[in-house]
Image 1 (cartoon, helix red, strand yellow):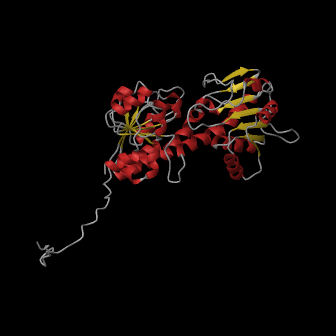
Image 2: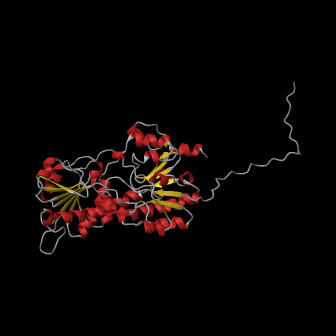
Image 3: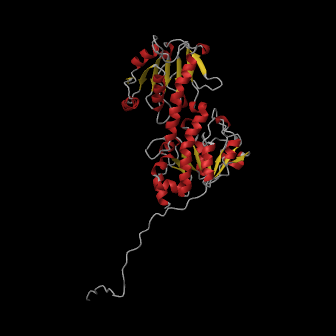
Length: 404
């Protein structure tokens, strides 16, 4: 049988299909709720009245719980004048679509969360509990963390701001406790003509260490910095623009420097879990009586073996004659400055969320925002959290692509 040739009619016209483009959705009005924090020593608030004013002027609704800004000295009247609604009932406040907190979600707040809500808050990994994550997953929550949120340049803007505040505050705190009135050595932090400068040892060359060094040098102190990350030491050297005394974490050298120092600062960071202890009890016992230890790493366990968590009401303890300052969350002690720093990051972010038509659209448009998302509609998208709490991990990129 002869093979038939394909027949093409001249009456047909062949045209390419139209290209399908990703059409940007229209902007949406956000309903934002800011609760009053009840966490230990948390005085910050995530949005200042000025930031709330910008959001309300752009058509977004903001509800603030009564006295939520009190710890940072922002009054209810300030928020009301900025266009916010002041809410007395926490249950009512949690009915908003987006909840913004300066402390992690607490167990008391879990029943108040609504299905499909968006939470923007810190995680605080050392105190995170499995059942809190599971309950948020059950309620299909989308959650973005302060710690992992990145900007367009790949930096963590909120973490950096809090570290800058903590680093700068460290020397103010140390100077206070070196004074005779606080049973310190009775020396002035810094230096004056004819008297050798105060000796400061900083363990950790991250952002906290850098800003502690900047403040100490500006006051005239002698600064010595230890870190096992040589890249961090080089970066610190370049950022400071002056020759610094730096060293890798050699225990013999560190022990020798601690014996003669006036102030020791613990500023080590850890990617996950507890901060390593690098200063033993024996090393502390050989320090000068009246010298001061400020352990900024206490949030993650501390890098001095003798460190203990203290409070703003009782900030120091004395061991071996050495004054130990172990207040966690140092930026909360400077709550107004810290609140302004957080607000400077979150207000533009919320404006973008509104412009793009929601957090899901923004995550699709901006890759850097994806770093901050640890829950997406109830799916756990942070690998470290899934490993730590033995929960199912889902790749965020696949989740987003599957919904387009």
